Amino acid sequence: MNRSSFSPITDFDAEIILCFEHQMIPVWESYGMDHLAVSKPTLREFREQPLSDQISISGKKRTKKKAVVHKGKGRIARSWPEDDQEALHYPTLAYVRSGEAEFRLGDYVVHCPQQHFLLLSAGVPQPTGFQPYLESPRRGKKCEIWWFHASVSHAFIALSVSYSQEEQQINSGHFYVITDQRISQLFHIFVQEITEKSEGYVKTANGLFLLFLQMFLREIKQGNFHTRGTEALRKPTLPSNSPIESARLYVQKNLKHPLTIDMVARSVFMGRTSFATRFHKETGQTFLDYLTERRLEEAKQYLLHETCSIEVVCELVGLKRTQFHQLFKRRFGMTPKEFHRQDKKV
Image (cartoon, rainbow, N blue to C red; front, side, top):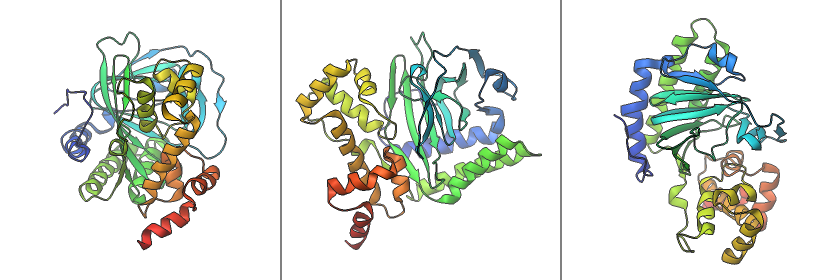
């Protein structure tokens, strides 16, 4: 059963159960590792692994190989802005639900059809997610991708959805976050098995990932998850055709990512200076103040869940832990821990 429509999902709870029960789990039970590819640092290394006949690869030179090193314990280890690539500290798994996705990994492109999985390994350059997962020419191309995001601390596993259609990229901004560490550990053990390739690893990995999917689905059915995203979007206060309102929606859907004013200005086809001036005029705030406010408001919602640790919250809203405490207290008049304790007493 394939989803042919690329319109944004409105009932996520029903859609996630449908996708797991009728697509992801049956696909993995039928094909397992035969429908999984693993990103590698180079094209040569990628070609060395067994690959589905439906997956194709093409080389693509990078614009600039010098990396920007990201210090601290954030999700990004290095980035290459000119190539719209980044390398993360932890693995991410993509499931192509429909269409064909084209992932630019380092100096090559993986053409991944529907009903296939791609493991984006830690440390390997991958797309940042701000551009469509499609290579030019993009006319007539589209895909829907479901993402499993691990965490630096192994404290949670999250699921999100993105859509690419021609020149348009939509990140739903809706995350299902599960903090049961057994499920997160299952994912990491699965990754470790296919990375180390010990004797009998294929059979072990097949069983591990199937168990992971089944346990993840069980948590969803039982309501044991936290979700923030589309329902958290504020009603538009500016005209719907305003580029500043579009920028605000773009920010809300990408809070987890390291956003900059240049990046957001480009998303609405404006220059940095004109965007900054118009943003302040229409919202009464600077872009940085607005971005910080939205991240703190999102963090507050996550803190309402007693199982969401401060470390997890920081990862989910794109703030460094070293600055989170000070910013939160300045805005809400209490520390994150004090807010958490206060809420539990209510």
